[in-house]
Image (tube, rainbow, N blue to C red; front, side, top):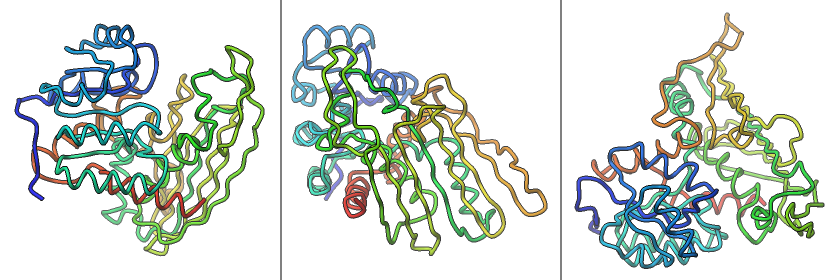
Length: 362
């Protein structure tokens, strides 16, 4: 199909659906990323209420505010529709943006189920616009450098990898009411879908496709209540994920993710090769959410025969500091793909394959 390009201006007009002015991933990552990159400008924002939409427009410096996502997608100044709402709404909102002939950036997870994700990938291909899914861990400076080192043979043949990442989300009995939906298995926004998807995508980005995957999940913290109301929150989404995988290369991988960290949340990824090892570790942060491999800064170290201590590796500067850094890297790559006709940024087909991998494992 001939590639359709709705972008007619020098800068790409971005419309963010779910731009809550008070909290959320859009305000923490997408808005700063768009503001920092000269290729983009914030054309519009949308929330479900007129007062919050107008507050978001004023706070973020957007030109237009909407309460209807379809109207945002159809606005002529919007070239790229960014979907940052709860996962169950992704299908409807992405479909509306594609129907309007617009490019789409949808947050991960793309959908609640693998069949839904596949259907969206097929719809995007029919629409002929450029789509991207929010698997931004690929664009961490440390991940970029690690991938270069692995591809150049600095580690020799990769033998194995170990991924550990924890969150403090489930460590407290009382949790904010707005997070309650993430404890529901049907929301598609639990530990397995969110952090599990990011972790498995990162493994494959660095080391190649997964050939076999087996996993076990568990709920170890089932007693949560709303901090605001005291109402109990039913917990059906797992808070532990353990997986073993074998890659097409023959290398083996173990993954352990959990949500109940009472100490400092952290990430450590070790990759062992025949000629050296790499370690990607979360940097110490005041913000516990930044310990997640897709959000915060990762430090890179390596060791090799004759020099077994872990030696820091320079990774280069981030385009934007803080939580927006990796998201900005993904926006930048998407714009480059659009400009040069390449396909480096992860698209909906990438997301659909990842959803299918998770569905087969759990």
